[in-house]
Length: 336
Image 1: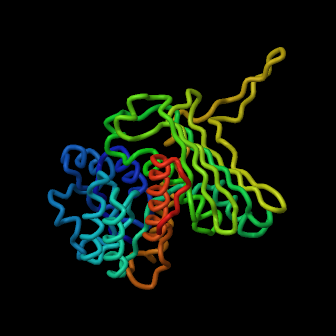
Image 2: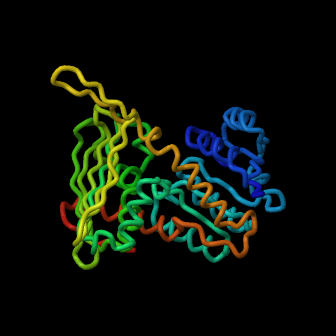
Image 3: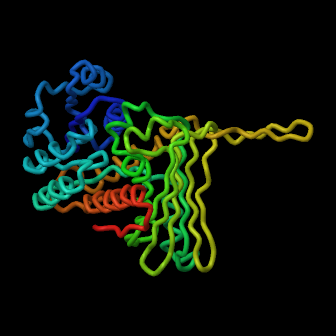
């Protein structure tokens, strides 16, 4: 079994802890958080121990793999330290908000040879996986247009916005990764337009809450991504891929499949109340994929995990170019 430690006991850390404890290929050993009480709560709930220091987490004689779910500004340092210790890593995105630092740490980790996976969990959505299978099989011909929607139900607190990196780096980046994954291509340029419609004060953080992004793929195919922080009607996420011979779509998810008929009206179940309810199963699926790739605890001979460090860096490079486009008002080249 893969001996696992978790760094980070906040909301997303608690989600990962549940999945770590439930995975039959994992021995969930340690939890570390700067808030020891939060770590204690999670550890007690799942039969793990609390690491009193980071040294315990980076002890390769006791730990095979590490899940980094701490604050964004700590990801790079933890990744470097785990790679130096020979410990496999599953890391929340991004590696670091500074792309140059992310590249430097990723290069160090790649040279170390340890398996590392970036947790772009939406790749493990059942519907998106089937959509990709259809695209890869040639079922719709040559891809010509991809449309992605990411609309959250409510504004996050401005305190979160202040440290998130902004809509392009925090929200849209998942869909930059999906665009690359679905098309099998690296976009060459990007145009982004955005507004502050739900929360005017977001401009104080050089951010937007409503945006439309266009990516141009090699050969001229286009990707369109609309991202919204506040809908007022639930969480709305969907993908459509149009090709030269047809179209495939993964529709928005409702929270039920019941329709109520009365007179001249039909009332259907609505959307999930939040993003987490929509994507929750993908976290466990991503973890299971990582465990399989690391080959049951062996750091040698396993299939390289994906999304890889390179995938993480490329999605972030698209996000950086999109931020530049928001400011310049021009189509910007993407510098990988």
